[in-house]
Image 1 (cartoon, rainbow over the protein chains, first blue to last red):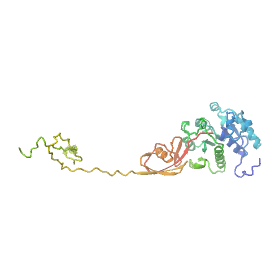
Image 2 (image 1 turned 180 degrees about the vertical axis):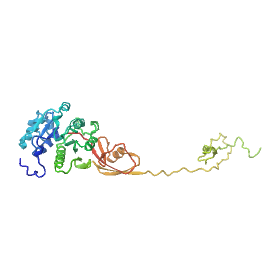
Image 3 (image 1 turned 120 degrees about the vertical axis):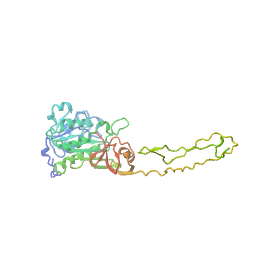
Image 4 (image 1 turned 90 degrees about the vertical axis):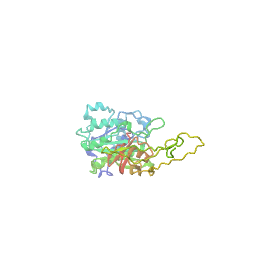
Length: 233
Length: 137
């Protein structure tokens, strides 16, 4: 790809093979597309789920031909077709197995886009916090029309503590549900939140921030964006 | 019959006064009666003329004006913006629920970048940021 449109903002080369995305649903797949479009080579893509028909409306990276494929594999193939770069797929995210093989998540940058607070807590405390390698941890949480994104350095105790304050239990989460009890989701919210996370990542390597958290609403009747962490702890 | 002696037909109202308070020195001192209660008069035949006995003990009027309610201002932003005045001592989550017209379950409440307990009592003006607790990925 010719990256003249963003080359002066972001240099992808130092990040080749150093970026992992855990969870490739609505948010993770949108983020994978945005990071691949920055021309980062060899993204490490983690998800154990299979693409299903009901994923297509809000998971923008997948198409009808991906139904039945593992999401990590389908994403890697799609991104290769779109950017020409090769990416690594990991079809199993067994956190307990990974605990015994901590090297598996030893990436300089880890993006977390999983769908439960329990998984976030286990990933952060069990795998990323003070693993000696990860210096950029970026995590997103999506509601129907709102989202939150965090960027911290997990080697910094103060930043880690501030992040942990926001690891609320799953039973405190507000989920908008449809008539069948399914969790409602719109692709536009995922794309907006992925855009925030892409900018947090770019801004960190532009030296503008190393610690940030924002929360926003996207629907026209309750648009808002607030910074929920101070810029510097 | 002596005129000063009450007859059986003349009911006597007995004022009930507040209990006698004891001073710190142990001397009994009589406090000012604050209320007079008339004891029910015994039944009298209908054709008997009864003199009304009026107590001369002064009645202290009750205070009718309520004490002023002190208010604090809760300013909120994030999911919705505005401010609301609530009585001092109001629980933060109840004030927010009034302001946002919704249950505060599932909302994250921050002040100056730090999480705030929803059960906090408001005793001074307070500003919070309200966001939704979500977990989708």
